[in-house]
Length: 245
Image (cartoon, rainbow, N blue to C red; front, top):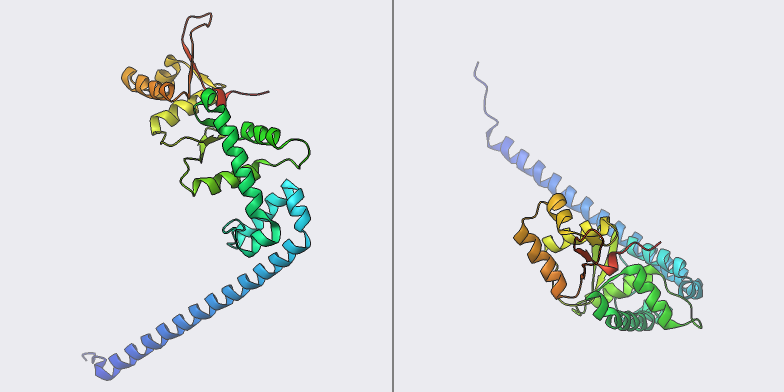
């Protein structure tokens, strides 16, 4: 016997069932979103209470402040988002990071003739604390990183670069291309210097490609030339990548 088709009535039943499933799925999704928003709202309230109770610890202790930033980030709260926001009024973050940003800019400007606008983050932290003096609390690497991130949003030319295992603060406009980064990473792995032979052997650059990359870094003041080594081979030094014991 030939099987009979499901007919118009059967099709309508299937369509109705699909519609009910879709509506149920949408309702469930809305309920989940509402539940998550309610939970986040509760988390934010708990975080506000925590910040109020530990305001002085957050201001005074850079490690405590770092962990507080991490807690904020985990629920999508940016305490630095607005100088007029609740967090700035509660914690004074607006003034703190504005002042810290100014000190970071001053330190970078003072050392720009020597490093071409690239400074290792630990060196910048040391220079900023030196400028702050001994009468105020020292700031941490995380504090300076936060201030640089705020500066970068202003289009000021400040940004963070990852060169090998090091975090470098760039304080001049312009982009380092892939070749520049490869040369810097090679230098970082050797203690802050590199020879032409190292670039050719490790990176596989042609002479022209290598010279273009090195010359660009030299032109920006981001590399130094050392022709005084006993083996007679020229070395290119990058002071912000040197290994400090």
